[in-house]
Picture 1: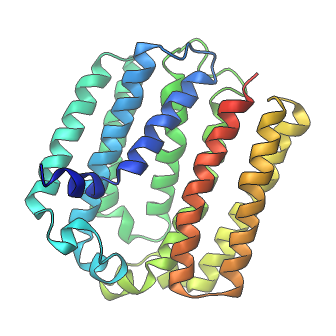
Picture 2: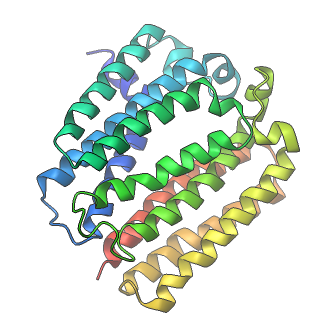
Length: 282
């Protein structure tokens, strides 16, 4: 029992819940019933894959996390390293078993996501931009994964496609901000992330460009009236404007701890962006 809380911290349970919610919203946006069992199973599978990926990430990042994230369970010793691997195995096995009962394409996506996360932790994270792109692709895929619970409507526009695109851009910008926050820890382990190659300032410029493009794109559905007015109110006042504020905050206070705060705040904005689609569906 004493390991339950540390394990929940290891898998970053809030991230897992966000992934599961993203899948559910992706299905909801293609006009699926809220209490659909297949959609619930898909959400659980995505949450488990996220949990496994986070456990594996902490296992591989022990040395760099001593500098960047000293409070994580493996660093503090509240969870032994071997248990992180066990969590990864059990979570992914459960996700695959659940996905067998879904559409074949969903099973393929689930297995592909597991492989990408292993590839990310073993190699991609230590490359320039490719690791960021992998995380962004997986972040966008959760909505498509949910939409595929009804294959006939999965490509219905805007459906799950628009939130998938927005999630891709949002995760890409946030990953660059996170890399700046982790710059010292990654540099100590000779990890060649983008800030280490082009400088933290160069990464901030790119992250700002991507985030600005996203903000502009989020306004387009309002003009096209794809969603009801709740979408516009939430996305503009609770997501876009705060994002602009935190980007400005990052520019005027270029300290690593401030970038970490911005990355955390962006996670809240991600949830609010999902709420915009949830309450904005016509």
